[in-house]
Image (cartoon, rainbow over the protein chains, first blue to last red):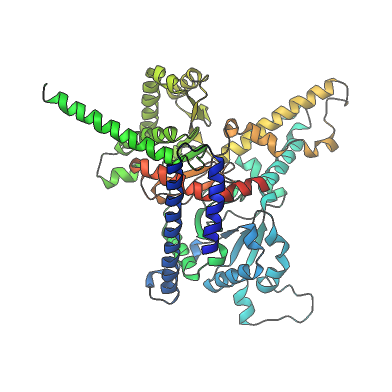
Length: 255
Length: 287
């Protein structure tokens, strides 16, 4: 963590130096302030680790007995560089499976998780085993989760493909009626292209920054987005806390 | 009378000190990258009114004052584009009297703004109203169009007010506009004798519309994507706001209700942005 702090500050210094800064003293002060903020974030991380320990070991009672029915579809956004560490992702999925989450949407910008699809499906997926021997038992059924793998190409580019579908449908014939496109037109076109899954209720973001990194836009309308920090510092108790907080949220949907 | 003047002087002196301190702080922050575009979801007006036991509607009035302060700080620190989510298409589902109240406030404020045009044009603020303006009441829409026309030549800073807006409306509309544009082009091609019967060759149609075409026709296509998206009152969802444009955007959710938002939230948001700058720039380049 200290190494990342130092390297982050040296890069920030390089970035800042390339900006026009009037006063040398203010520039140094800026650097010091950001260093202090980084230290505060480290302290916060330690406190979160303690909190997670307390939650995981049952000292904080309110985070148990989760009403998981409210989380019908959980989305996970992972930074692509962190997603390459498959064992970390598997550990996260094991935790989710232990909590009782059944349906997960896994997103990473570059599609790294998509490439490791087989690994996840084998560990957690339905018992689609090529051999005849069907491994049954409570352990396997308990671990079963449904997955959807999404990457950047399933976002804006998919909408462009849907646009082309709609163009072909309504604009090829010069005399045909050309309706004003609404959400329904777009959703139907996307369904034809295979985008049939629902919107995630809760989106957990694992990465250095709180940013959804290009998750398909039309699916994020009312999703609650929680930043969980880098994947390598994930904590079981904090997932429980995030889900618990989500079940308490009251949405008006604009009304 | 004599008692008033000294306090007026002290008030002005303190105001001057305040401004100088702010300017110093903003200069200090400019040592690092300053975001070009910040977007705000102004959430929490009704909760504020309830919290302080004010009459209904007073929350929105307080919210307007907060908006003015936040805009001032953003422009002072050097932000060029500020977008605010004033009214969602979903908000039309609220009680009719509340909707009417918000429309009335908007009308009142836009008219007030039109009276101060000299000052606005001196600061070079260009105002744009973004959304399905046909859904607004006639007087509000007319006032909004007047304001847009009156500030059209300003280029120093931009204020985008999203009214009758949702991303769910913006994206299909952009597809519609893109289709209209491309079919116009196709027709022009046909008239040059490339196809028979005025029908576009189906095989050529596969890649007619690209992502850049859609982005050109988005309501928000007139400005660069936001760098920070702020939602007040601690809620962590985007509620159908700038979903397409927030791909590489830092999401910030201060706990303050919108009427409580001010100087420190703007400062903290920008400091957070500076911490994330290197990472987000890397992601933008990878796209």
